[in-house]
Image (cartoon, rainbow, N blue to C red; front, side, top):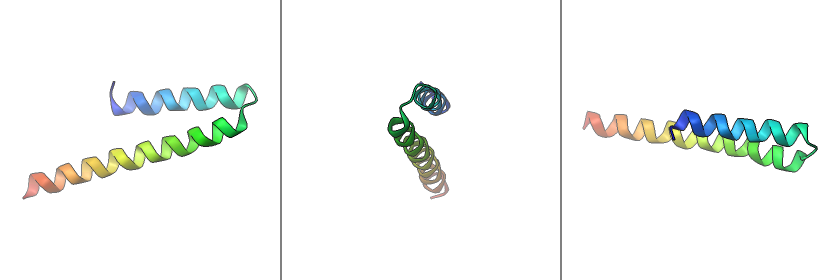
Length: 53
């Protein structure tokens, strides 16, 4: 699974939760998407910095 695939799957789950009356789960999935994006960006930045040294 790619990082993009993970984000897409979390977004699908979030949509399902919203459409099926699971607002707390949808909110947690919002947070999970943001956390995943942050961690992915941080890993990419760390890899770029390591490549420069």
